[in-house]
Image (cartoon, rainbow, N blue to C red; front, side, top):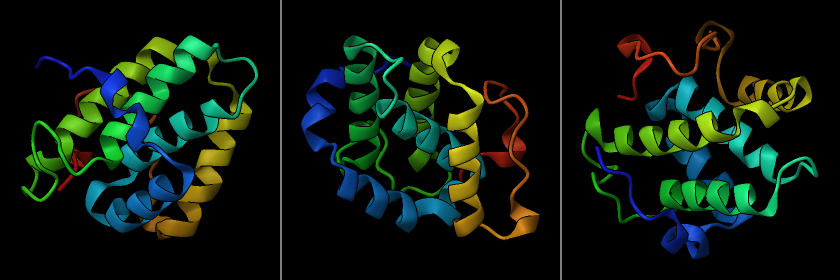
Amino acid sequence: MELPDLQKYKEKFSQKNFIEKIQRVAKRAGVKLVYVALILYYLIESNKVSVKDKAIIIGALGYLISPIDIVPDAIPIAGLGDDMAVMLYVLDKVWGQVDDEIKSKAQRKLSKWFDDDELDIPKDLFSEDTTDAPV
């Protein structure tokens, strides 16, 4: 899959739009997608992340928020797959900057949106395990 030009999605990102979108799609998207999105979101606040990396992260989150995707979000199963692929690609690029504090913040927010039995946070975010794929 060819990734979209994330720079054109930067203007789609806002804190308010991100929170609204992630709350709206959380159950359908699954814990893994929401966890990855939250880690990227909290990385923007970190002073350890370069401006260049923040721009890429904002582009990825803007792509998630945007109603115009390669695969529209309304399509069951596949609709959020492109969003996940983009976010995992970006997360892989900045993974060395993700510390335990960022992971903890993301996990705390997940616990507000998901029940305990749904909170099986993936140990390996970059695996291709389809059991937690967006539905």
